[in-house]
Image 1 (cartoon, rainbow, N blue to C red):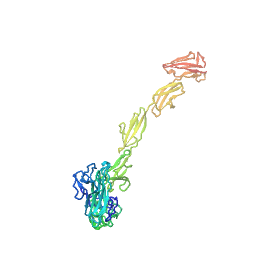
Image 2: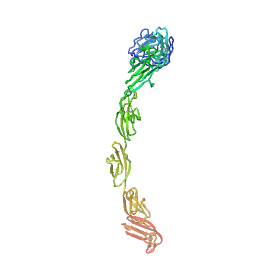
Image 3: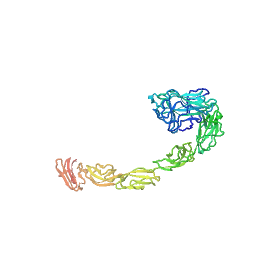
Image 4: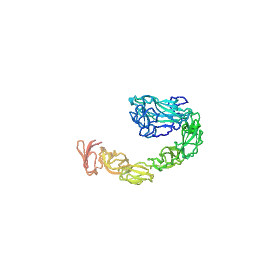
Length: 625
């Protein structure tokens, strides 16, 4: 572990107002600003123990190994007994060492050192970091706690300037360093003090501690710096330089009764240089083009401004000047299809993000902190780079064109065509590229098979829509049978469809059944309503009358079988109810006037047997007089 000067400011735990020749029994830290450390003890670094402290520093015995009660060592290791095994406290060191103490069986002083080169009538802060080495579970949970008294004496070792006790520092589950401090003031003519550490506890199981990073610093008012805008720092973009501002220091008067100033500046925040002649509470910076830091050294006496052991430094006012980022690099203009939108994108350098606008200057903020943007409409959009440090923007915005290509507008169709015919299928939109499910690439195609067809219609931007055409074949009517049932004609089709039926080709009906039709020859017509053909079939409607009235009135006077003579084989026989044959005929026309041997037969039911082309029809009819 190497000695290092690390500037830090502690927030007050207790405000210690110290007066000459008084004893203050409170631990606490400087409530204001501090100077740079004027004394820093880190106990060195390395993998070997030691060296022992200088003679007179401690009454304990130095050992080069594990320290028993009343012994101490200087080591980078605490891995002894059942102690916490941990590193020292000093930040960022390697193999850092600390002061390891195993308390004596009797209480008493175990450490003292003299701090010289102080300023008289000046307030200082002492602090140190302590660690209870014994875990909470050690000594069956009954370990003796660490308890240390800190005292600051004058250099004659006769007057106590400040004193304070840590109180019991109990063991913890995991190692935990704690910081303790005292604030004191030197007496008139006094330039050195003696620090003493006293063990309030006793030895035994516990009361084992490690100490590190003992620091003395001057202590003064809390001193802030702000500019005219009441800001405590400024972040300026490169295009707003050169930049200047007026800075003012504001002490809170908690320690100092008078104030003298020396302004300092730094280009890295670490190395500070006095600004000649800058000794007022307000300082006007020169015109700045690069990052610069400012602070003020403050003391109660003008002579102490030159002695860093006697003054304090204010908060730092940083003026960070950030170079404006380069404008974003476009990843390309976009033409996208409305069903497959993609965002615009740009590339920016490290430590920059992007805001999107609708104008090259000013305009509306569309999106922030993103290198991509998804527009909702076609147009020109503008990307502006923004630095993460300082929020500086690129001098120029990058323009990106975005065009949303509308999909070809198509409509699905349900189409019909007649059997034996073809139909033309149309994509429905011109000047496009086409790919049909048949493999054809023209705007229209002709098909002769029913089914579902699709066409992919693509515009010049490569955006596509799919049109579906469902094609149904309309069958030509095909007659299966025509039957006569009494005076009814019943037409049966081989297929189904939107058909109409007619006995003369002029009057059509939707039903395939015709009632009360006189026997005769008919040209049966069946037509498809969508114009897909008409078929005609000649049919003899053969009717067996159910009665006749032979009264010579000229109406239904004979039992007449119209058309029977057209059949190649026919035979008719008429019987009375007793089975007597009254009239017969074979392969010829047939009619009967109701007589037998020229004698008129009475009203009654009579029977017939009709054979036509190997079919036999048996029934009865009525003779009415």
